[in-house]
Length: 395
Ligand code: FES
Ligand SMILES: [Fe+2]
Image 1: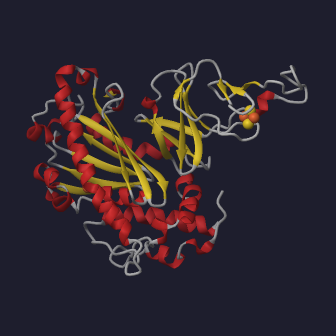
Image 2: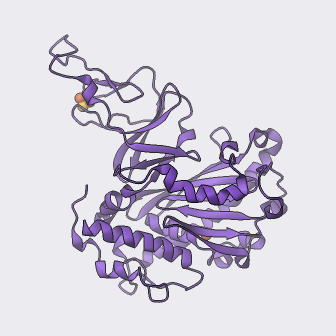
Image 3: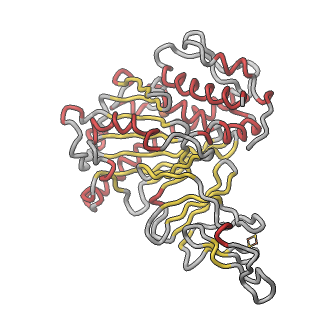
């Protein structure tokens, strides 16, 4: 846990975020620029809920492991021999060496490069060479069962691997239930089971020189659409959008006029349950803290927002199509057109979020203000952050 320095952020300014939107000011600059706040945020804000650290489909086969550095924490995603995905701290129990440095398939055990202690794919310590002296690999005074890798609470949902660092958040099923209920209207009860990713394709990674929160805030609103996204605005206009705010943990926007298929000539298979009178509906929801989701009648995407440090973020997008049919070669051009359309949109956003980051170094800006209508979802996200920050500082 980070040491809490109450001066890392002006608490009176944090409280002002919680005012009604017309009187509220935004989260203070320090929360976007300070590395000290970043550490606090990991343990007291992001760590208190469910954060995404990667994608289960990136673990391409059983026995595959991926080391992850999440906000400077060394973690390890593993798929065991039975296909189960688990997350552990990527640290050897012996002297604390980082255990795995590269993604890959594990043949046999995971061996620490320092003194060769080895673990199985469920994190159990299985081998301890010379532990009891030269040539003596066990010792009555040492119980291997007590020194396996430390597991984190984790859950896979819509291909994303979530962890709860603090260990005491509400169960994931409860956390996600409001969104599942909402999207049942579109993809029924089995929509997620139909999502397919093409052979590790359909992915996009974008690095932005900004704090992670600005990428989420920018995603929450459609307000910037006409000026930042001229191509998207040609087929899904500002006036076709509505705000979304769910419970205390999700916000975004929906469109009633998404029709890339018309402009790009795509004809991908659609979710069988998607209502016929809503084929042009699409919803874009930020699941706090660090997941951006999008669903359309013929594809879905998930973006993990990976906070690298206070002023740098990686956006990791994975695109999913509907059912095995959608993976056939005859749809290759449609899939490419879909991915390219999102590449354009997310690339257009880079200048906006990086520009806002620059503004947060200015003494002439103190958090900003909100449009009482267009910025409702952004304010909603900031209220969640302010509430968590306030609670974290008051511990
Ligand atoms: S630190 Fe890993 S075996 Fe010693
Ligand atoms: Fe945008």
